[in-house]
Length: 365
Image (cartoon, rainbow, N blue to C red; front, top):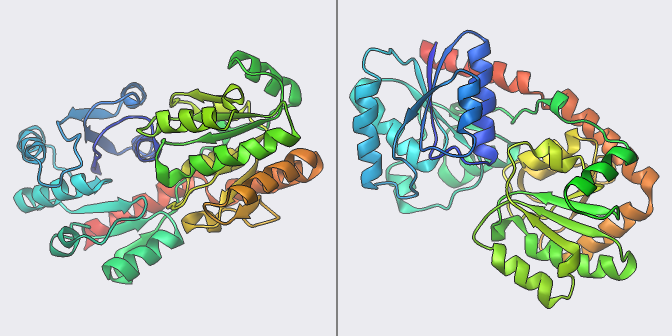
């Protein structure tokens, strides 16, 4: 098959990781793969996997931006004669672009819903979901059914997959070495990886750390990611008087490197489609604490594969952190269960094969 992936940019993040996994997997399975997008920090990884990159000026959040129509014009010229079999859109803007490409070329397209959308009028008038839509979790599937009235037969539940071989369980010695490389002390390290957005719940984690540090004075918090609320988070840690124990580093292309330094991973999201960084932490054998929301509930079984807390509850987060830092045997058991669960249920190969079948099914319609 000739497959075209559309996304708004190739910056570090869950959507880009998803497309890289699918594109490289489809390439290995003998398909011709194209990715049309604005550039970004992960572009070299696509090129290293011999994936054809088609630059388009689509880095916008406006559905009817002139950039959409410029991208349409460029792609129509570039794709002429390439006989694309399926287009796979991954953001709202690229769903609109895929719809326009379908109108001009007749090429079938699908989309992936990576999270939760607001029920705006434009969504009802111009749904643009495509022939089929992939839901990355049961919670996202329910969202599509209930909030957008998409027919169940038009939704395919395909979980994100993890290349578990990239993520290793670390010894105390290797953790200590990695902490030193990151400029940290050897005290217990709590971490979070994700874009710095209020929906991710960073504020509640920082508030929780104040209580943790009162009990465990050498504990540390590592916040990995970029986003518009970074200065607000820095200011909060200063106001709470814990800024010397809270460390910020920018997004990293290889999350396995930062996860290898952590003793505990926390995802205090207010909303979450599934949580790729949470899955990677579980694949690393880390004990995890996460909010009882969205797709997280399909990953973390409370007391068996981690601990669940109510969203926006700093006291519950701090209590869970203190419990797991104090009981290393419990933390290790939760981490082992979590890694086994990801290995058995969320493999990258499974995601690629199920997506490939969806492409074939759509071609046959």
